[in-house]
Amino acid sequence: MNQTDIIHQIGEQSSKVLFQYNLALNQFDYLSPAFRDIWQVEESQMQELLKLLPDSLMEEDRPAVLRCWQKLLHGDHVDTTVRIYQGGQKRYIRCLAYPILDSAQKVVALAGMAENVSRQQDFINYLTEFGQRKNSALEMVSHDLRGPLAVVKSVAALLRQDILDNRKEELEHYTDIIERACEQCTDLILDLLSEEHLQSPEVYVNKTRVDINEQIRNLVEFYQKGQIVQQEFMLRLPEEPLMVELDQIKFSQIMNNLISNSIKFTPATGTITIRAYQDEGDAVVEHSDNGIGIPAHLLPNIFERRGASRTGLNGEKSRGLGLSIVYELVRLQGGIINVQSREQEGTHFTVRLPMYGA
Image (cartoon, rainbow, N blue to C red; front, side, top):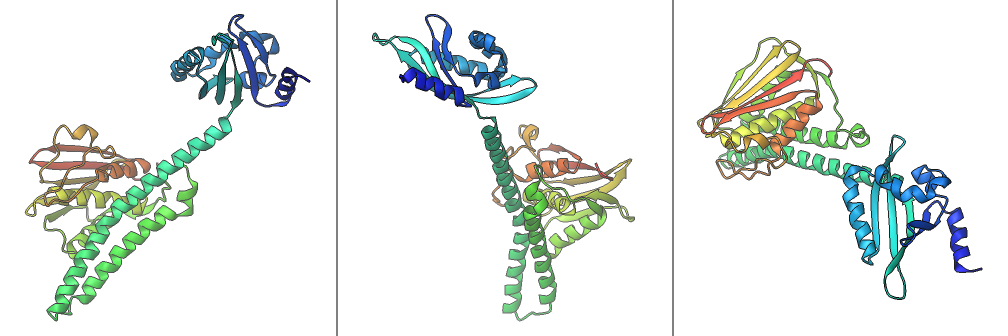
């Protein structure tokens, strides 16, 4: 049995396409039957396959295929994966091709194999997406843990000083602040590690009926009691509850990031104002400060990841994540956010969240 017979027998049984293309005759000397499963053409169209191939290629992949063809003609082998679109389905095809040279070292034919690697590629794409979501979630949680932990650090310093001064009347008060800060950190971690979050292709949103006014008051009180905020808070909240269906933890993250941002870029003598109200079917939260504002050239990219990394007034380092986290958490709950700002005049954020499930 000669080598050609062996190759033909392998080709007849393999799910991979084995081929040899004669450049002088512009036709296949051999093409295994598997080509019908990948390109969905009849055997009578075998010699037309090279003409049909460009039409099935995704537009973005055509220049790459042309470059591979030129490489083969110059005597180099190629190993590439391309996308084809047939029958309403996108497939990933991996092709390994090698130039066949004559005695004069001229390329006279091309040989190799092709296979449908859609399942493998879909799995790779899933792993890549999952890895990106994991990195994004870890960045988000590590960023948002810094606020509560900064309060704990501040209160620990106050405790140490009170112990040195033999003043113990404030210990219970400080203990309460530390407990609440730790609860915030724990809630963030549990939200990240929840079974729903791990299984869902999107970040899991656990909506419950929440009084936004109460959430804002508790959060501002938390910052004030921790004595890490020198700026004055002004709350303009309706006396009656403003009930909204939202994810309580994610709403706290939104407000924490907005408050932290204002603290960072507002002088100690400045003011942070938070207003909430109902506008038809939306709950609106307006968060503003009279700080240094946002430079005009940064505004277009302010909600992009690392789109506006600036050092705070007291030298606080920034990774440019806070506002991108806010934007994503608002979007996940069916809301929108916009910003208005002028340098040296302050910044005004408006968050609109649907009051009922979106």
